[in-house]
Image 1 (cartoon, helix red, strand yellow):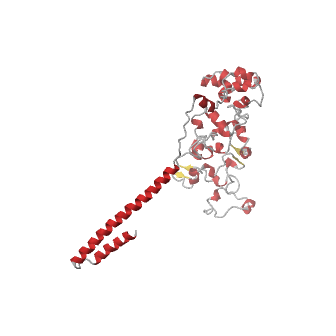
Image 2 (cartoon, helix red, strand yellow):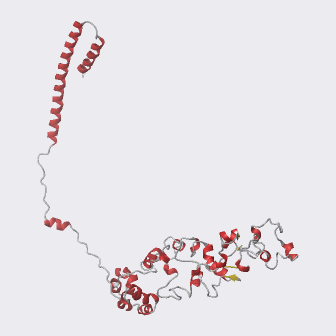
Image 3 (tube, rainbow, N blue to C red):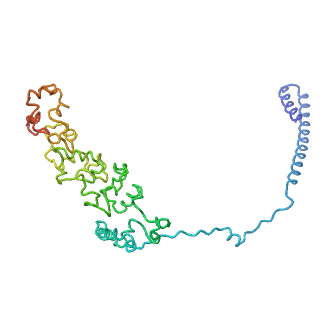
Length: 364
């Protein structure tokens, strides 16, 4: 290594002496060649020593003999395989087998809506009706009522399923346009399942409802709406002229409040066509939303208003010509005409809009 360093020093020395006497430069070049030869000899000698030692160490670590590789035989392979017994697969046994234990349920289902509709609309004979929803029942029947038998729980028991599993089972057949928006609807998000409102075996109302009619079924949860329907001014639900489904789709819609229309006004216009317009003179709150002035379920005020006139009108018209102050107790004591009778409506009778050329104030 020292010789190599000397070599590079000689090169640098040559560069520094460049341009001097030619004779001296020639002698230096001769000395450089001699140094190069000596460095090469030393390098070859050191390399031979290093590789010779490493070769000896590798040979010392080599095993004296290679262990023989055993070839696996068929017997050894067979011995290493663990044969597992397959679980029995449930098969369809028919409604007659179900009737052996659940005779009363099977007989009542024959007269139920689904018991009649499955053969008629789905082409499923009654013998397969039970297992269409509950799954193959051979293992369950074979358990003979023994709940400790693994086969006893191989059929679907809807009381034990979560709401999503129940709804998915029903949607296998009832997937139509009316139920397109069920997934993610307000009822679905509230963990309401199909069996919360319907019962296949113990239905009490039309549509396999758990109550005698649609409204009573809805009232099970919506008790506040039930109280509103008992108010003096209400929708004719109690009289049987309409029900909750007249305005709402409980299976989901793309609109708020499960409304059966693009918006509230379009829903109201289905019955109140005279309020649709178009009008020459519009009443802006009417055009925006009917529920601005009316309560959709019921009210203690005339025409299902959310407040009594003139206080309802003065929620917007607080500063008008006659007068600009709110009506208060003094006006009631004085028996002002604006308080009693029709109030604002006495003059502004076309409150929903007017087509009269002079109907700017909705008075004609």
